[in-house]
Image 1: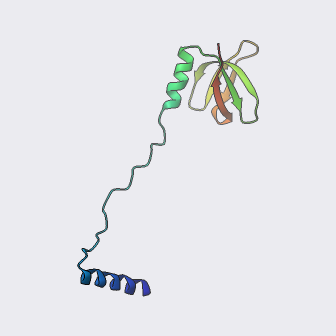
Image 2: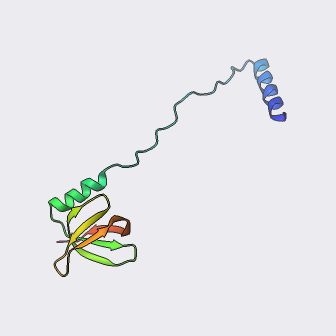
Image 3: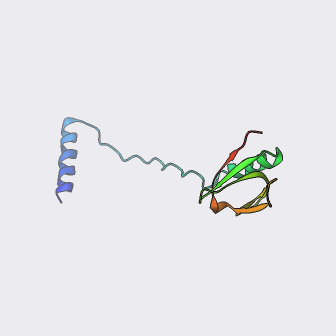
Length: 101
C-alpha cells in the first residue's frame, strides 16, 4: 500500500509541476543469441580439407597428435602416424589446437 501511495503522490506532484507523465516503454526484448553458430563444422571441415596437423587435449589432460579424417555430431576420427587411429568423443575434448607444420 505504501508503494502505491508513494507512486500516487509522485504522479500528483509531477502533474502539479507540469511534468509530462512517463510512459512505459514498449520496446521488444533483445533476441537471444543462437544456440549454434555452426562455426565448429566450418573449422573441422577446414582442418580436414587442408590436412592440418592438430593436437587434441582431452578432459583428463591426455594429448593426441594427428589429423582429423572424419567427424560426426558426437565424435572425431583422429588419424595418427605413431599409433592406431582414434575415435574421440567430442564431450571428452577439452580443446583442439593446430600444430606448426
